[in-house]
Image (cartoon, rainbow, N blue to C red; front, side, top):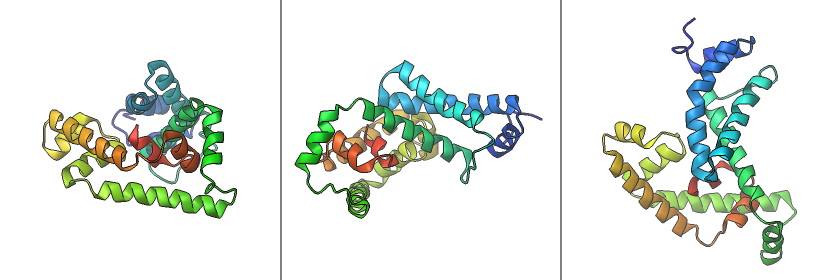
Length: 201
């Protein structure tokens, strides 16, 4: 079996048969991308490496328990985003959340109310995204939703890397400005593990 040329699903199926070489191939394939994604938000190389390692190691340790209903790539990046959000939560003082609850009485213990708040915030995000120019929106989505590197985006869109950087910077600036009334603590409190949150940071 050629592990390097095997598909993700083939490697995953071999992992479930306790094939360590298949796992190593998946590890080598995804660690750089997961580490890069993590480092983008936690800003610390050691922490970023630890988070990426946790995601990849969990795949092996839980290989006989996991039921992956999406493709492996989606599973990895969803797990990575959840790890990043949990790490960001650790860096927010408890008083921030307590003050938030006191200040925003709209936050309710009712699950239904929380779902409405989350839905409203996500709607605002999508509206802000729709206001971007087609080029900026495409660059942003390829980076944040499809997890491509700037070089990969440049090839995909047939533009220069510097153009990608320019479009990405402009997109982030517009989106952050559109969400400026919502602080990081409030977004974390309301979104919980919603993956949209890490797009802005």
